[in-house]
Length: 324
Image (cartoon, rainbow, N blue to C red; front, side):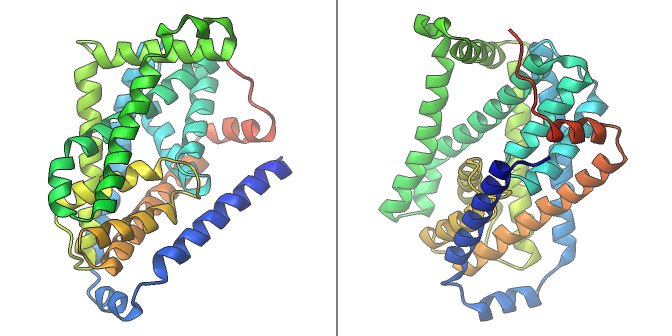
């Protein structure tokens, strides 16, 4: 059963999403949105959904390779199925947290154990966010050419360099002897060592990093397709420079499926770039709609899969922590 605390947390995330959506839309001219919607071309949105589905497949390949380095065995079809189910839970729970929790439960109950499953999902998430932060930081020169506002530039710097600094601090955790004293910090040190092994391995790093790069380039392609669906002013290069930093912000789990955070951040990004704010709102909503459609497909996969029983029982009772 869902506890009162879980309901309260969900209500708080919902309130955050609603408040941020209001903030994102309060300055938007409805007439401008109406003009864009009159030009709506559904084929571009279908393309965005197809890109989202392909992303899940590529993400499953990356997760499988990371899981193997954590000692977890996961056939590729199973990894894809778990990824589809996670896409559904990403839409009904805060940000990416719900999907990651679903993947951990499914991988653990498929015979990999809680520690291996948890490590594989956390490291997969870490590698993805690190790759995204690297792309955002590497594109700062071109981003500054698009955004001249000093506040906008400062935000981009903080997002990119701050994320890289946090990642660097995490990778150095196992070099601190003090962390070996307690069980929780020991686990963090183990994760840091595994992360370095993945990132600096000659056999695994190239494929894992290439897949991460491809996944994020496809996120920009999804945003560009969403813009084309309503004839919004957004080139593919603009999508790389504006949308990817926003997606880095959305990884912070403070709203339901990123709604509100994504819209507010993208409206501001368009404003700083001198693009119509209404286009930023529409592009963001269509990205969310494409992700929601992918999540619905993932929900159908969950309903017809035997994995639904594993997740249902996990939500009804506390999940056992990884054993030492």
